[in-house]
Image (cartoon, rainbow, N blue to C red; front, side, top):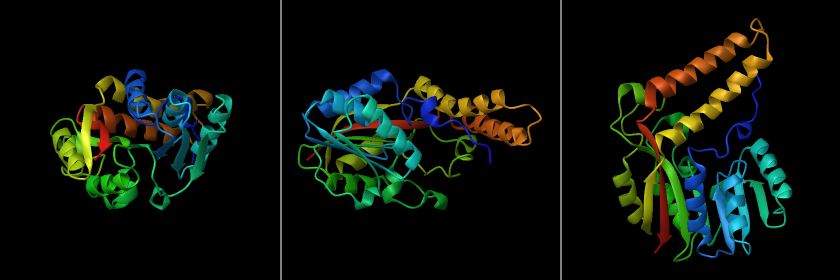
Length: 252
């Protein structure tokens, strides 16, 4: 199997998230002057580290199951002088107990729902119920999850779970959040530019590999196939249809 450069080499965040939107989310979480911050599915920890920089009295915990990403997160914390306030652990979020003053969970609802291999709809309610249990009243949550930005098409669903009910639209998602212990402060959807930049992070890994290896390398055909599949799935499939909602929520 070809080895590609880690995604954090080409992406700032492991989601379609611009600098401007990230600053907005950081300001929302840091505005509560938290003493404890949790990032569920933290990846390489960029968003959590930015929250800690904006909330200098806070301690942060990032949990993920990807050891390579966690190692990168720890290195970043050291470089930015945050190693004494940021802990990154390989841990199932279901085994994490609160309370935390602020929580971030972006693209990680599957932790509390059916396994992704089952190709079933996202269980937003289970995720939001679990996240509410981690927060005290007035605690803040940034919840980011997939939605349909436009009605799904066969071309859009085919490279995903293959079903129209895998996601809901933004309005129904807000209703689910409000029915499970939260009040909405703001709701927004990742832009097409943010999605293009995010998907390009995956494309870049294939391009870097092909540039570093001869065209007749035994693995080159597989890399070209993977790149073509990614292009077809996004550019010819769910681009502009699959969205990523960001909800700024307060526990009530």
